[in-house]
Amino acid sequence: MKSIIMERAKKGKFVLIAEIGVNYYDIAKKMNISVIDAAKLMVKEAKDAGIHAVKFQTYKADTLAAKNSPSYWDITEENTKSQYELFKKFDSFSYQEYKEIASYCEKIGIEFLSTPFDIESADYLYDLMNVYKISSSDLSNLPFVSYIAKKNKPILLSIGASNEEEIDKTIKMICQYNTQPIVLLHCVLEYPTPYEHANLNKIISLKSKYPDLIIGYSDHTKPDKNGDIIKTAYNLGAIVIEKHFTLDKTLKGNDHYHAMDQEDAKKFIKGIEFIDSIRGSYELKYLDSELEARKNARRSLVAACDIKSGQVIKEKMLTFKRPGTGISPSEIGNVIGKIAIKDIKEDTILQYEMLK
Image: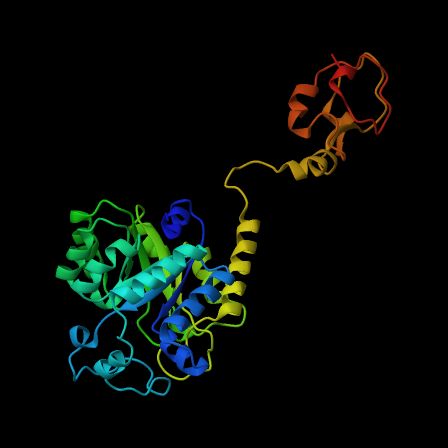
């Protein structure tokens, strides 16, 4: 299966990635089904909503966080105060489970990828996906970045909580080993991100500074009523949008509280389809649909008085009126000084065949 993400992004087409992460654990518990079945259910719901790709997170708590690592999220939404304790709840999957999910994704026609957080998962995910994702949290982990870059697959790079120097250094590291496209994802590492912290104008700066890269946005705001955050990001130039995904936004903990659900995804896709429909062409030309108005709403040179055959046309004999089916006022210089070859009544739209 070709990369839906890259095929669309390289053509400038909108890409929506559902960041399932590890939310399927809570869905499994809520629905009293197996964790793998919950993961597949979320994939199917994402596909049915029109989403282009699903992304998971592949880690083991023991290799990701020290046991005393503090939280950095809103503990009123997710009350686990240790990163290690939180990650330990959701790290049961390994190669076989991700292989099963990847096969299911290919079967129903949605792209699979998962963010690796260690060398082992970076290796075993290689055959399961077309694109690698590097988390904002690993942007400065240059040994790991270089390890992934050497696999020479396209890379989605989130740049949350980073400065310009760090971004430049990481991109340079990737390009040293990798010839594939890079998608640079603006991101704010604040869970959830208040709307006023979305900082979407940064997308414009990224497009200007990195014209050879594809620019996107990884969103952590709560879905707003009209999808304005996502639509604005797209309008500013973010082609690839990644957003956490759940089947129940009321579930406590983890990434449900700032995630989109199926209806949100449909709203985003529909909104961006409308945006695409109104953007039109970059050509500086009139539309075919304007031809009738172009002809009738514009003006022509019109006789301001009766003009006798043989008279020399003077400016005071002319005025400008609709429709634009005669000689254009822009050509008045070509008309003044010509001779009428027939009688022309007042209010007649001038044509060149009336003159010599």
